[in-house]
Length: 321
Ligand code: ADP
Image (cartoon, rainbow, N blue to C red):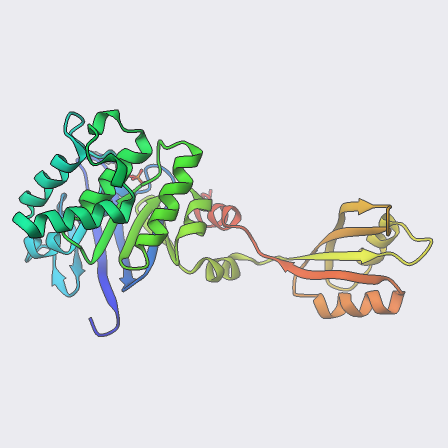
């Protein structure tokens, strides 16, 4: 599409027998973006992804990939997507190469072209040394690479990865995250996660869903800016001779606009200094700079503390009641 939108999701509703899993989900994913679909368990992430990949029909609403409506032409849409489901249904008794050959032939590739595609994806996911291994003998991290390889075999425009690091150990998680970032340089990626740190690390943009509704959509910086109603300022000070950190707390609290101030760190040697966290209703950095100058304290640090994703997430998804 002309505006760079590759995936367009509009008013998706999914009604299971008695449960409304999605209550009108809309978002766009742009070319080249790594978009994180973030939400607690049960939020509707897998349901959204299954509808995107045409594995599940929506009760109502529309999905278009590169302008093609997925209800009108699911075959064309599927050809543009690579999908890594949450639990990859890999054939554990098959050898990696044979499995990829099988997946590739199902996708309609054969002969030299099929072998080339297999070689390409094996290199992309770093499986060179494991092509002859039985899938069942691989670690979970390497099985996940096989899952990524099958998702990319037909060189799709968009990769859809459902909780790609769930169940992996910490080292494998780092490897798979790095790999996704690498793949994100040449693909548009949508991944789901309930892990805030993961989304911050990998994604350009985040759509947060909660109870089947989008509660936020933007870059992590934008979300942090939107949610932060309280400014937290970090202040590093070398107190004037004869003054202690607690003296400074009293001084800070007396400043106009300061709601609270506390010492977060104090060092007496080699040069006495202390760190403070100041809570304020507005950005008081200019005032605090002037206060330090007026009072004769040395100012060694003055910055705004960004609200972390954990805080954003809680404030967006907490129940009103
Ligand atoms: P997530 O992936 O964010 O954990 P899901 O999309 O799996 O969430 O599920 C969203 C909601 O829909 C949950 O409340 C879940 O229990 C419900 N759900 C999912 N699949 C089914 C199903 N096949 N039948 C009935 N309810 C389902």
